[in-house]
Image 1 (tube, rainbow, N blue to C red):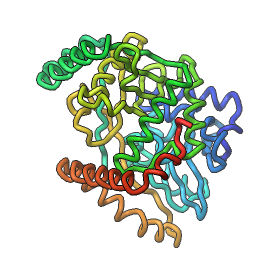
Image 2: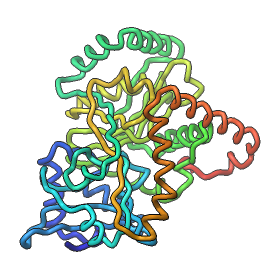
Image 3: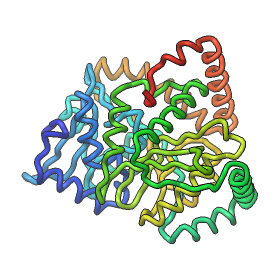
Length: 370
């Protein structure tokens, strides 16, 4: 096995990576694509990929990040919603031997493709990921939503008619290419992060640059998709995500809070699903998490796992003490809807206080809109 930067892979290895992903349904996620690995490699010096060989033949790739003291993280870490071993189904490697070859003492994961034989022994939890299944067409999907969430569906369609009457025809732009549209979305998202007590991801220049690179990418097997919902000529909600040939993955949804009473984010998701189906996509992955709207918009689930692989070392012990209690606490909150809602309210309260106490700092804080 060898460990290289993603950009150092040869043409044959890149082609094999694509073939393995295309032929394995569980790997159908853009965060597992070679294009994403190459983009992260251009921006972050710690991007690596383990190239696994058997009898002189490459059989697997593991993209990861190698940090100080042998700490390993999935490529893209907390920014991504899927990671895993790019290999044929059933390939089983020794997890600890793999770590040793990668020069790692510990490897944490929280969005691993569930059930991969190499990592399955180290899974501490398996989580459902809600999806909008479009394989039978948008009308079939909508029929499912009507049947399982009739009240919610009627309410959102009523709000859409109201929005159209008061502000103009509701329409969705699919794969918007204008940089100004992206700036509008990232400004909303930065504002949402601050209002809800989260860290503003767009305050980090490398993330902004990554988004820009992904926005400019459009190939048959991989691309960035920026969608924007309008009422008349006014943008009210949008989303930027990544796609393969079959799957669109949710990444950065946001809306204008001035239109919150119309539930534009949910409205946008329905229009986005309709356009995704019309462009030949088979599903929209909404990401794991406790948001209630995902529960009634979903028409299926896939699964990701959380866990930790480590080798005996002082680094692994210190890392365990720092991370495991936090991860267990997070799991308890995620598994209990009442605690999830309480935590969400507390974070929003913190965001409101922070904004009130530091208005000037908030105005000067860099974001993807600048």
